[in-house]
Length: 72
Image (cartoon, rainbow, N blue to C red; front, side):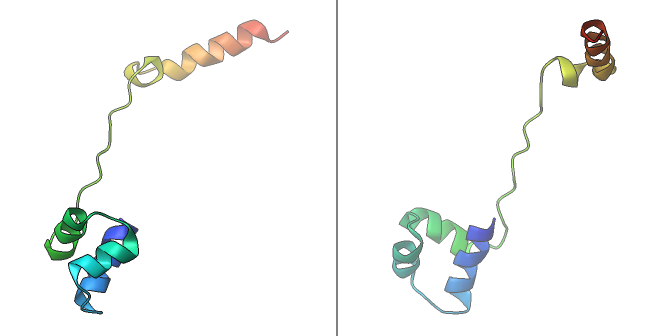
């Protein structure tokens, strides 16, 4: 996200061209164009975590039981 804001600032406040922003940031021309000229910011993709600890309601109890079994 900070990169998107930086690109927008260079485009809107400093009036730099897409090519100049691309050269300074190292991003492709297409990426700079997309971020500089669109009004909305890209949303962050939050992946759903899977596995035993996340699918069971009482997953923490299993770990506690394991720890109790191995401690003297």
